[in-house]
Length: 260
Figure 1: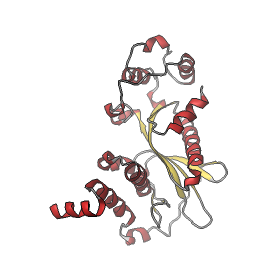
Figure 2 (figure 1 turned 45 degrees about the vertical axis):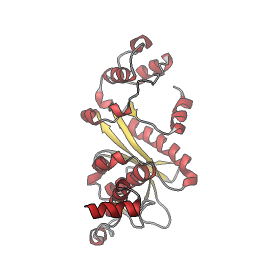
Figure 3 (figure 1 turned 90 degrees about the horizontal axis):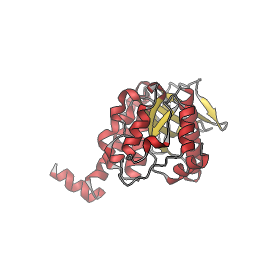
């Protein structure tokens, strides 16, 4: 192990970068016999919705049982949907943004309900994934990152817009909300109050790990399509309230511009 550690530091600079590359390598270089056994099977989902003519989106109830293959920009050959999403998560969140904490929680991205946005190209029989996001139901709220202490800050100032609270109450199955309910409360208390105000918890979910890949010149366009498709897919599935964590300023401004 000492020899491995020395080599990892020499080649990659640190063990974390080495582990990241190793996890990507394992996904991309799975035994070709496993891949070839499925390459002659092309499965299409006829129930997917189409956005902007050529982009498909859908909610997959459990990606670990989905038998379809997808292209990603990080592998020369197509991968099973579950592997493709894990690979994209590693490449974007861990390798690009250096969120090495996720190395211990890769299994979260390999199973469960996910939103996917993808497109078919003329040159490939398999579609290419453009975006994905993990959807968690209230039955496993204890696993939600939204309520994790890591994503809380005592210096945050909540935006308690009266019109926004009224709109939220009217659009969802929530107890009536008033600004006075949240005065002098921390962001953690406010978020918990909002959650427990939801009368029908099946209409709420958490959407996290939103990835955007593809051509860099189309990044903002793909981000817009992903948010639009995700919102429509969740609404069509009966979700009225979505808890999420946003780290991209452009996304915050996007929702702020939409106002109510």
